[in-house]
Image (cartoon, rainbow, N blue to C red; front, top):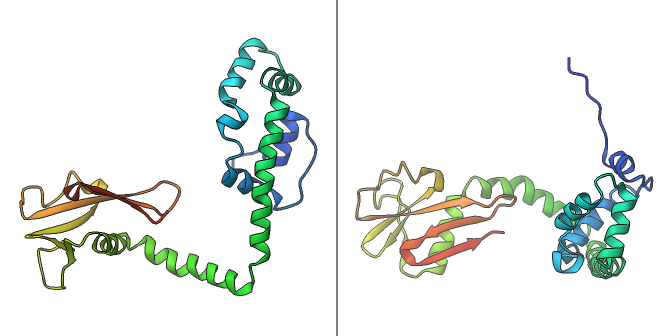
Amino acid sequence: MAETISIDADERKELTTGDKKKAPKYTFYAMNNAVKYSSANRKPLVGDISKIHEEFEEKHPDGDFNDWQNYYYNHYDGRERLDEATEEAYDMFLTIRAAIDQIDREDVREFVEGLVLNGTYSNRNAREAIIEKVVESRSECDRLGPSEGPDQCDLRLGDRFVSIQPEEMSDESVFKDRDDVVVFYFSENEGDNGLQIDVSALSRTLDEFS
């Protein structure tokens, strides 16, 4: 049986920076989202931290966290940059907190139901979402009836049929040699449930469900 050693997030921070402060439970998620949605850590505001740290390591190969902190403060106006970033993040935090205060039990119930039922259904029925979006956005496309068109076709585009297929099927399409069928390939966005649909035949790209 493998023997493992675990280091949690707070301990890792303490071991690398010497910072022993521990935030109350769950506050990380609130503050992290405040920074995320305010973009308080964007490069124009705080600088290109990766490049600045590489520069620091080249000049101070034996430097510790305090050296790194002082380097950022002294060479890149770090204190001023962090103060400005803090203001932006804190304003967003107040906005998030005000929104949370309006949430009641029924809102949570609907959210849970959405995750359990709606999310699962929509994830497994990407094609249906794409059909709805294409029909909604392009008047020249119509939904096919149950007995209309070739198998695996979902829409009619003028005198041709439209098949909606996952991008990974692009090299295996059964419609490659058919002039009467147009194929729209789709892929899922990494990190969310968004869809990217290649509708080159319509000279348009759809980006929906982010």
